Image (cartoon, rainbow, N blue to C red; front, side):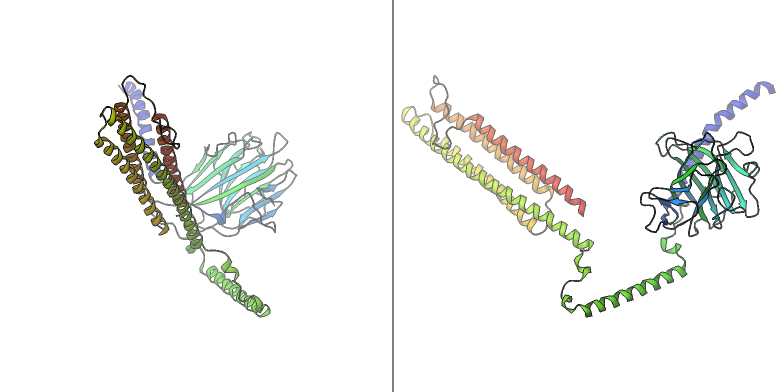
Length: 501
């Protein structure tokens, strides 16, 4: 009975593993640490170096050559050594670094390699990939040359040290390696990227081999559990060449502080020692006193310029700039509404002309028809006239609403969507009343003309020459397009102006 149960047990174990890994993944995602970029422990181009050739917050030694876009740790010459180290110790327990580098050489085999460090003291120069031996911390070595002849290079090796061990060069550190993986990082089409994470005493190394431009295309390389590192240390990167040589270029070194969920990250002021704070405060006071003295001396030597505004008054503050931008936006809105008011006046004048012309023509036709057939009544003419008066009243209301909006803008108030909706509603009312007028005019013309005659456009005074249905709809359509276009233009202007608030 034991033999048949074995496959069943293996099957149950195989089915149970995905559920366990999924639970672990969910737990890991829920406990993701908070990352904060630490610029004092990082560098990245362009404009990487200062005018004096130094890298801010970093020190370089040996054959390292900083440039605007990268730091060349070693050139492709024999027996070269170089390194770059942070000037200050890190004071955070958990961290993550992302390093981007290139290792290029003409030969099929290169040497010696590159190393990324986190140590208690700076290993400025030494025999271990250009840095000091017997370090207290951890080194991640990218070894290019196969010293032990096992054909396991290029490779990545994680080596820890308590400050007492000598690195085993002959065996490529295999006897001291805590973890390793075999990866070829030489002569890749894209820069190689490495992400090293130390979180809750676990060191993880992920590597992007540089085959694709995807910056997040990382592969697992190595992991060390229960690793105890110094609570404070220096970050560094070094490289060395031997009988064979490669160019070792570092494009960026980005450091992030990791904070456990539920814990508050320390403020930047808390990371500055009290002695440094006092030193910086004294230097600031000293510079302030020197500046005041220089100002007094300048005023004594140039009494004629005392009445002129000071240099500090020439430049506007953030609040002044925001206030100026607000006033400029309000002024543009003010001018646009004035333009709209003028257009409404023009529309009102044209409407009055059309009403007068139509009223006169209807009165003439009505008088002639009453003398001949008696079909047009005085009541219908009065209805048409009242409708036209209602149209004029609606246009006046639009003008009044625009004037109120102009007054509110002058008082530095922002127009809301209610004004736009009210203006749109007024315009819809105008369209309805104009439609009623057109229908009444057509009805009167049909009743006044014989049924056998072809309906013609009434003969109007010289201006306008003819009020046809086509002209009427064209006029209404043009005004509708102008008004809707203006409303959309103002909405876009308001959305753009909100970016400054």
